[in-house]
Length: 157
Picture: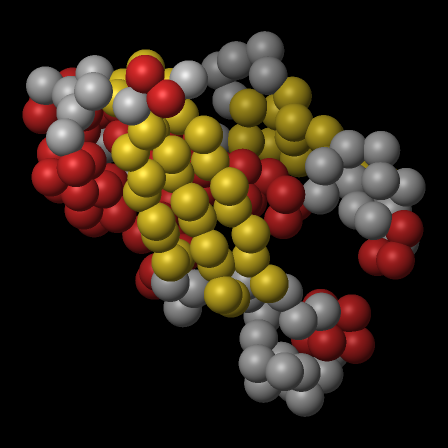
């Protein structure tokens, strides 16, 4: 398989930005919370970062599930990460994580509605954690993602 290039361009005023996705009609609009100088009219870049992590996990899980012959009926994700804003806002290295410049304590729970057994879901989870490009990006940035994969039977409603 050859390399696939993903590209965007962005422009804005203040903390608001419009990002055009190359070779598509998609535009991503970002803003920030008022505490960071924004009007909170659009999701923040960090919200989009977390959204990228959940959606990339789902895309990767679907690819891996197809390889393993697992049918997933539905995905539910819960994700949270902590940011010490001291470095961002004040330039201070004295925050609770030594002025951590990235998200830390990242916690992802993926609930899969499937008839696959627990062992198959565990194998799927290991492969997703190994292969998801955004999970790998977080890990290499020093933000390991604590993941929990839960199997829910379609009969559980």
